[in-house]
Image 1 (cartoon, rainbow over the protein chains, first blue to last red):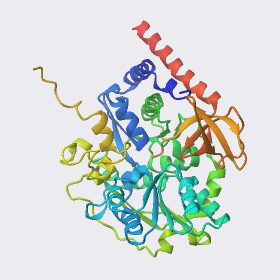
Image 2 (cartoon, each protein chain N blue to C red; image 1 turned 90 degrees about the horizontal axis):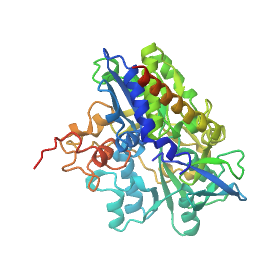
Image 3 (cartoon, chains in turn cyan, yellow; image 1 turned 180 degrees about the vertical axis):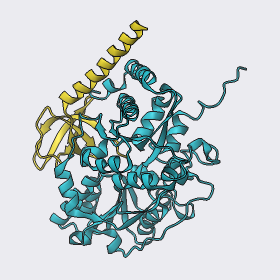
Image 4 (tube, one colour; image 1 turned 135 degrees about the horizontal axis):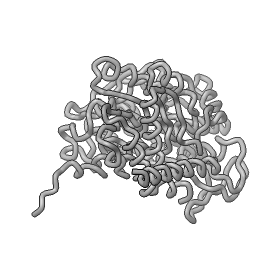
Amino acid sequence: MKYIDEFRDGDVARKIAARIAAEVDPARSYSFMEFCGGHTHAISRYGIAELLPANVRLIHGPGCPVCVLPIGRIDHALTLALERNVIVCTYGDTMRVPASGGMSLIKAKARGGDIRMVYSAADALRIAQENPQREVVFFAIGFETTTPPTALVIRDAHARHVDNFSVLCCHVLTPAAIAHILESPEVREDGTVPLDGFVGPAHVSIVIGSDPYVAAAEKYRKPVVIAGFEPLDVMQAILMLVRQVNQGRCVVENEFTRAVSPCGNLTAQALMAEVFEMRPTFEWRGLGEVANSALRIRPAYAQFDAERRYDLAYKPVPDNKACECGAILRGVKRPSECKIFGTVCTPENPMGSCMVSSEGACAAHYSYGRFKDIAVIAA
Amino acid sequence: MCLAIPVQIVEVLADQQAVIELSGIRKEISTALLDDVQVGDYVILHVGYAIGKLDTDEALRTLELFGELSAAQDADAVAT
């Protein structure tokens, strides 16, 4: 595929790896967080960590919207499907996320809940138009990449008077999460998560641009390099981060210039601002309550807000005690440090959210890396 | 979740819709998040919507940057 395959060339990757090895200072270590699940997936799938010198470590960040979706929000969608006779439309990623009482959307579907997997927000609106006698809710999750399509369908539903349609809005914001990690005690005080810089979001940045990261880079003195999701993009971004650290610079650089500009997609931003407003606070799985980190539907579009329409009050629900997703999402633990990783908790039967999406740190490590730390014993 | 792919516009339709092609597969998508699209443009497709354009000149420049880096690496290898 054009503009994909060229960015997956193994020979070039090894050359960038040699350049990184030549430029790192052997007297120090480098720890970079890849914020996005897309990067986490690429790093595991293409064996990027194995191409890096031993003193360059990658820490998985919380940028997988499925992973950070707390149980209480999925419970809302379950309530609508099982108790309010609503057709719940959702992206496939949310179907297997564990919710209260051992439930998930896919189990609720097996129990007769009318839950439909959709590819696009537009499909959810079409289902509402095809079923005027039923109420239809689109369970909308995702970062800024996925938010503009939700804004568009809300505006379209308003314009076309699709009164049986509403949206359960769980859209979250990237810069707020990055700032939250940089403010966390693990990073600021006790140093359990050493952090020398960020591999910055790819597709989120197409929408919001590279400018929103400038404040964090300056305030917290951490370099950010925005990178595409292909393996060469990630390798090049790591090289750029190593150079910034070596030179004592802390600025936002853009490796993904083929798609990301400083100001981003202004049309999409204007649309988001028209339909959504900031929530004062929102619970993230693993991070807890984070101020100004998520969006809700503006009062002008209140009739399309499922939370208001069905009077849903948010109730936080603690995660499974054995599950280490919270610590993994904060970069404090690695998937292999969780007791139930790969035994009780697998992609087929996930206990924690990080095992659900292919972008989750646990699912990525399970799929591509779980045997690599095990010594091979010849028979 | 943020999965998105570069695809080429092969036909611009009414109501901010367009047909794209990817490895022989054609699909109708929405271009409502972009101000202007033309046949031949590469766009980044996410959940049925083009969320941005792909700048093909910049893509080549990035690939050249990798190439220069490879050349530098080869030069180092010769020098050592």
